Length: 195
Image (cartoon, rainbow, N blue to C red):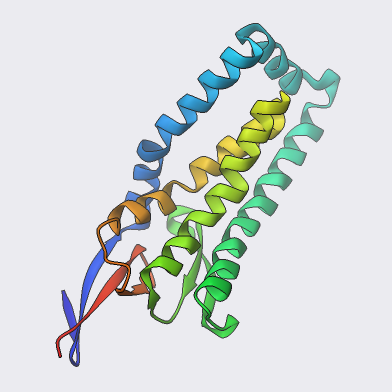
């Protein structure tokens, strides 16, 4: 814990590298569940045929690959923007308190809120990108049989792994608590008044 005046800060964070490792561990069950559900619902043979069509593309593999990279880039920007919009709307914060960045050493984009907020709006800001860019597209792809949409959804479920880790780290923090987003690590400080 660190102390600033009469406020103690309890650290609920991990390094970005640790967050990326834990992301794989935390999302693996969801990814496996989705893949098994897709295979059982549409049939494993159909799933493999769709996969081959995606990879083959009758000579348009490069176009499909570039389009996929574009979707991942735009989706990643959108993921971080969803954090910001949720914190601004649910946390009633100003846009001036939002900072976007990219940690080159771990290839990790991030959205940071520079002022304390109640823990529940912070939680909403953490969970919304995974729902909107990950779970919903994966579910839509599963229900419609669109393997491309399904795979994009799975990628963004994985991309939300660090956010799921943060939710796990703060799972026992009371809803009346104030939190401060960690400026360089995945997670936050819980602010404890010593009055």
